[in-house]
Amino acid sequence: MQALILEQQDGKTLASVQHLEESQLPAGDVTVDVHWSSLNYKDALAITGKGKIIRHFPMIPGIDFAGTVHASEDPRFHAGQEVLLTGWGVGENHWGGLAERARVKGDWLVALPAGLSSRNAMIIGTAGFTAMLCVMALEDAGIRPQDGEVVVTGASGGVGSTAVALLHKLGYQVAAVSGRESTHGYLKSLGANRILSRDEFAESRPLEKQLWAGAIDTVGDKVLAKVLAQMNYGGCVAAC
Image (cartoon, rainbow, N blue to C red):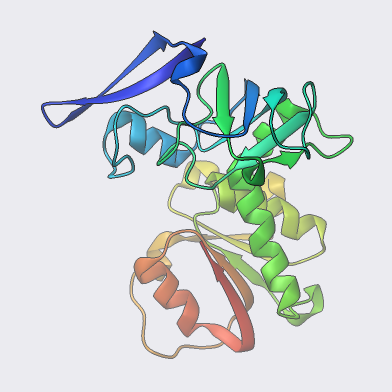
């Protein structure tokens, strides 16, 4: 099998495609033939060494993957079954999805839902899954389309753009915050009702005029502080 291997030498992260034996895979009760894995922002930080993502080397990055079970010691999964994985520290603390094969704990896997291909599962990926969790958090908090606008920060990123599309589909009025004017047309096509510049969120006071029924924040820092100060009474913020 081949895999993208991250190694550390003289304090620098080195990435290379290498041949591995299956016996070198880490412990786990399910071995998966990986068909697809999305390239996440966290993966990019790990591969380039620009983020303190990887603590132990060598490491195979890839925080998610989808494929078919090659072998299983877990009665919940059988050879040939389609599965997917997101999270669980895979690609950070445990060898991940940027390889032809992965071995993980059965508890970390989910059977691929009917009607969803493994390719489409990874097009949605961890970012899309996170966006849906944020939308569900707003729904669980009782935020409804008729309550007012929902603001999405970092709207042109993977989580943000998917959140804009999901909220629009569910009937919410969406205000998208982006630092790049070149993304405005794209965000409009996803369903954003209006676009706000990130510069408008640079400074904040403890309390400001109430503007938002809900918010999905992917930026943090001063932008999140501004959003919190502008929330309607009883509003909800899903920050990730």
